[in-house]
Image 1 (cartoon, rainbow, N blue to C red):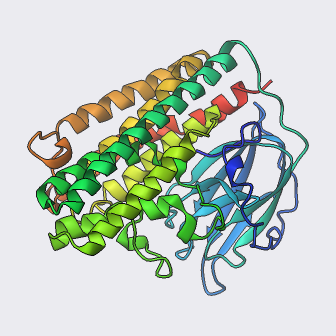
Image 2 (cartoon, one colour; image 1 turned 90 degrees about the horizontal axis):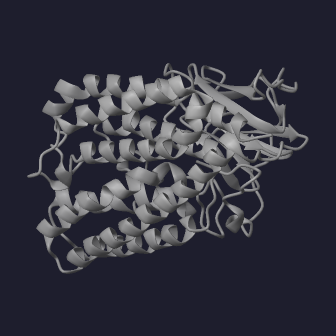
Image 3 (cartoon, rainbow, N blue to C red; image 1 turned 120 degrees about the vertical axis):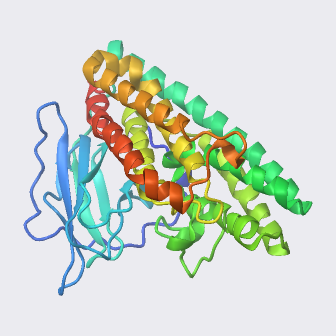
Length: 408
């Protein structure tokens, strides 16, 4: 979930250095203005390709009128490009990750005001494309459906604040037991702390600390808190939850390095706790975030990549689903007025996914779910994936609907 022009959630980052990436211009043939579709949403297609001539990132339009804009990314053959970001003044406004070739298109919707933006495709040639928004976005509507959606975003902000407060306390307990050398208690604490981050990860994965560029992992809070071994930046090294997980569950011992990692994690979670209290949200932020959390399930939980040492992937899976359901629940009163049939369909699919997850609960295991061993993965990964796909499909339609309903 990221800022719109009406509510710039990253204003606190305005002291960052100017964007160092030079805009390289739009791809050939992409110098036309996107025309809004019925309902007032502009659609921008981003296509990723790869081959003997290198990895490319192309736009079908390099400009759109101000207002709701949906960016849809399709990776055809680009094995060297896994993410796409929309940047403005060194802020990550929207992004899609885990963009492997052949996967279905992935999209996000934002309401943007006039100005210069950049499409950043790490690994492409060139990596940065200029994107222009013309004019001024319509003002937020008032009353009726718009008022219900606005009320939902305020309620969701309180929810996020509460989750991060609880994570701060849980990480404090984890650090205390690591400092005391209590391995068994620290393992249990790890499983209790992880779901808090999984519930709200999509709200905070673009935040960069002052003094760093948006593309610098050394200042990216999501990297510092939650990076996995598979995606490490060798210039930055390993930090956060999963480096601690390695020590507790693979190495099976607490060292001075483990204690240092726990101290760093506590510091970065504290930074996050202060930051989220400054945020405002737009309805499309909630919808985009809910969809992103389900994509997290498909790309890192069902594969068993997320918790490679502790195997508490189903704990994280449940956290992602809960976070997505909460975002949807805060939009639900307004969404019922916009599209009651879609609202009911999403509710029905959440019910089915939660019923499926209940079958994996185990009070004797850390975090309250069965360990996601190779045997469980082999037997149940396909079933779990189908359930999430059935939920993703209707949920992905919400962002455009709430973005247009919230504007006059």
